[in-house]
Amino acid sequence: MKQKIDIKICGLSTNESIDAVIAGGATHLGLIFFEKSPRHVSLEQAEALSSHAGNRIQRVAVSVNADDEYMDGIVKAMQPDVLQLHGSESVERVRELKSTYNLPIMKAFAISEASDFEKVTPYIGIADKFLFDAKPPKGSDLPGGNGVAFDWEIMDALPKNVPYMLSGGLDASNVCEAVERSGANAVDISSGVESAAGVKNIKLIEEFLATCHQCDVASLG
Image (cartoon, rainbow, N blue to C red):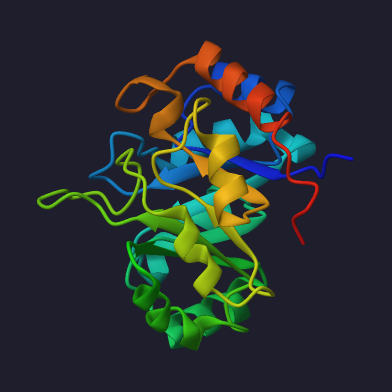
């Protein structure tokens, strides 16, 4: 019996892409609040997009070292179900945001080898979930969405009871291999379903989601 995996499509910016993500059976969508990203949305855009999605899907607000004023604006505009922190936010900052907004926190980390999990350890039990992405290429201004993969088997070094989403370089051609080799039961994609940076491709979204639903993750815990 196949186990259902959580699937997050990140960096959405149109109602059409949101409808495709929901129709395809994704569990989460992500809106990005980071001006250097080609997937950045304004607070006004976020309010309209989030309203369009409604309660049909879990809505994740992705920010990078956002200050209090900006985070207030994000939460007010989007009314997210989850806050994803993709910067260098400290353990104390995670605690503070959880307390302020009473929302689950997903903390993102860029990893390339097992030793990178040492920086994750202090956040275990504080963040509600983690997102593990590949380290960005040298010179990149983007902490995520670079379409780069990492050695999925290093996930064996992470304690088994730590909930996470696998990200980085995923697409329809490799997602099933990724969940098999990593042991992940949740995946995140952004650039892998785009025809250009920040431009979501509906056909690629549909193909990715259909493939995810066929991945054999029955043996995963």
